Image (cartoon, rainbow, N blue to C red):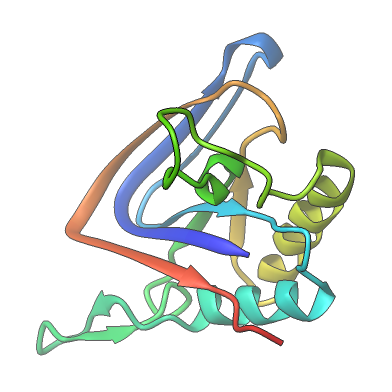
Length: 149
């Protein structure tokens, strides 16, 4: 599993075809890609990492607070293109991304697992074309990979 995590002062997603909009104020924008080797253990690991990642400033302006510590929210967006391989040719290969049949239930499980940490989680729509907007705070952007098991 791969996640690109941004500390944001606001973020939103619009899905015109579904007439859906989700938005958060201060918190984390998380773009996530599920891969074929990912398991329920990876979901739990990633949810814990996201909930406890200390990337918000404390009173001394050091990154020492988690999204929960600052009463923030999470906007979780499924983005299989994070698993794209661009090392050969000019068109990315997505063979490292899980099939929709595997990825969608794991994405839903990740959403529930993050909520299990007491966080408000907004989402996009799995498989939909989405327009994501964000105001990156810092800027702080991290790439997180689940550990090899």
